[in-house]
Length: 366
View 1 (tube, rainbow, N blue to C red):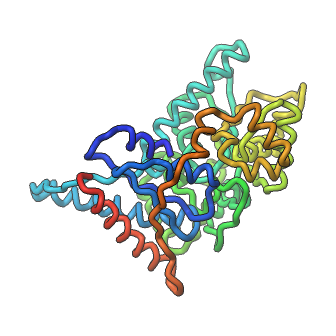
View 2 (cartoon, helix red, strand yellow):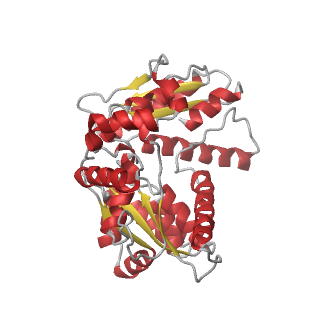
View 3 (cartoon, rainbow, N blue to C red):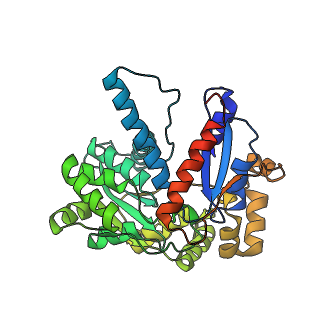
């Protein structure tokens, strides 16, 4: 949504955006953040399938574009009339900017503790984790010298990140499970490739070998040497919807704070990992929980956890004014990518890639 509004507000005839979301797997509010933007430079698309089924067509488009540009440069023919880029965390620019959050947060913790920044003040950070963009940003910040201890992943039942940290088995699940923390419903977190790159000391050949295996078999087993290294830097916990809802109640009652379902996953993970962030007077080392969204976007999850009365209390006491304005706006019907019956995922993704090209071509000056 932020990228959609940025493009629409730029009024630049040469800048457009095509944004995709999985049909039925985001909240009504999240959908309205995109479909209420009426601009010729914005195309909103819903697609059948899981949240990361669209990653492969987009990655292929960007890879093909890079290959084409390299060929044009080597031949001296630079006639390309457009440049495509992605704004999700498969674009390295996203985790690079997210690194700022870690430095800012670390300095605020030092201020609260009355301590000087440095190796004597180590901070662990718990993050609700889907595609691992924030985890990658935190690990890059740590490699730059930021005194971070453990980066802790809180996952929902779509728990490939938890499984690889615990066992070294980076195996894609056969199906994606629907959860109340829908924004972190991920089957293959694409930033894990970057984490492996830094973990191996920038051994791009080894990482390429690993990811080729993953692309071919949907399974990658990290050996014990690299698993030990992974576990020295990362830890994790898997959180069910029931545990998430229980924590939302506890945070509200214990801290007087409304959290969205993804932040609640991180709170529950912190609790399960022994940090006990809600317990008063608990003895703990410095730990930060990253809150990643506003509860206003997740009425269903908040209502399931806190009940109708809890949602009403949130609406009256803490619902953002700008978000309230969005609710009554008219929506623009999104373009739909259908999953044709009998087609494999690979066949559908090939079709979707063609759809994206056609949609970009239809946007005129872009």
